[in-house]
Image (cartoon, rainbow, N blue to C red; front, side, top):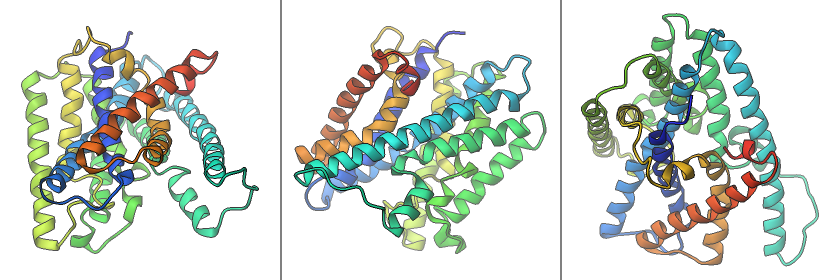
Length: 332
């Protein structure tokens, strides 16, 4: 079975959304105010569909090529590959960080043991904050595969998502706070892996259903956000707010959009770029940090400029890696 152009096309928009979420962390200057602050909030929450879409695609592709092999037997090789990617790139990124800090300091620094706080953060979230996605994907895929042939998978996926909400975004309401842990592990991704797998076994959804899910999800996400802010004093932008109930609908809706119009973007360069999204995801944060330290970006316009330049540079690096023998499996 060949690639679906719409999935690779929407991967480009999804990775740009991820870069948008991270760019404000590197924006130089003071906090934004006025319309720029409003734009920052809207862009942040409008970008939350991206990671759910990535999980959805994994579930869809996993079930699309199921054949007669039991789900768990199919999942194990994928998990092994993800483990290799996670640990392999972690070593590379640690090395890059050492070189970056050494060069900025004017010479190569001696190797030293990390402090306790660094070790704790690394064990919790990986050597880069965005790498939580890979172990979370492994766990979500294993949960789905273990329960795929039972009636439990749907209720379990929904329950995990509900627990993640209760101990994450809704912590001010419930008093149960796991912090970023509510996003990690199987809490967040299992629902979308399951939704993608279910979609692979059914006829493509109509376009109106896809748009309906996206609009309903965006509206519910916004309503939840306003309620949390007005009733419980939750900040508009906070590390706890990775997803809400509405985010689930929006993420699945974008997945349905790809299935409803499978040729979307087929005559453009976007599918070819989307095929390298994994590599861009892994490397973008280091490229973004280097760019921000070299040429500071200010204001909302500078923030979006940082997103576009980071994507272009990272994609170029990834394509160079893919051109080496054996390099493609590390970035695509």
